[in-house]
Image 1 (cartoon, rainbow, N blue to C red):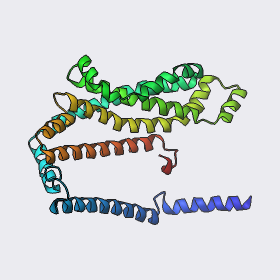
Image 2 (image 1 turned 45 degrees about the vertical axis):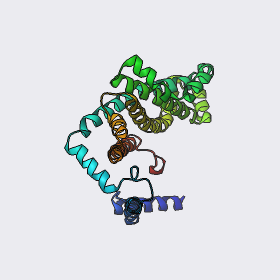
Image 3 (image 1 turned 45 degrees about the horizontal axis):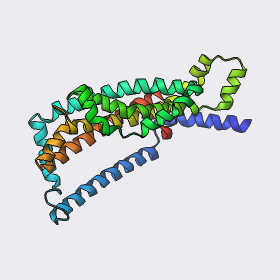
Image 4 (image 1 turned 90 degrees about the vertical axis):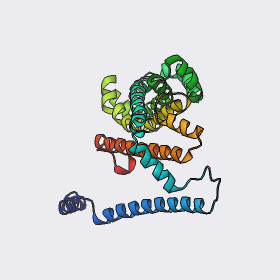
Length: 281
């Protein structure tokens, strides 16, 4: 008992001395990781440049980093990038909100009512297995060439990801704890609020973060098939003219934006799931 008290007092003393700040070793480790990440990027660009210099691929396909950078600057300065990027991002966010809300409600509902879940499970599996991208022309015919068709395709891709993750989150709850709460007289609503939903929240956020990437994929795919504006429409137009340096510039812009959005989602997730260990988020 004394050992436990002493160790707890030592832990309190250490936390007071550090002031809740990260240790020096942790800070150094973060800088080392950041340096390694930057080093990998530099090596990748260098290999790309060397491949271009020594003609290790077809000249029309293998454009230099300098050409791609110039094309990217041109997209920004001429004002071509921003309206198309806004069109793509707005459709992505709307699709994520719709699919996320519906997917969470459906996933939680199916997990809470196993009988209905067993009935609809084969149909969900079949729909999830279907190549929804192949329905893009049909959705364009139904909703027209605009935001609606892009949102519809993205929703059809994302909703099943969120449903599966939400349902899996509920199933992750300890059945013994659930049984004990029932024995102690907890109602279904109390079990859901106190146990099932808190346990499912990390899985739900994981599904939403994954859904963000899939939503962007669905929107860009729809734009490449038929759209008035959007990043996918730029890729399609530049590809048709064999301006691959501009195609790569648009793709890199999408990668940067997707990375930023994913980082923002990660920060929000950490703020909401503050009780989770950092390694599990």
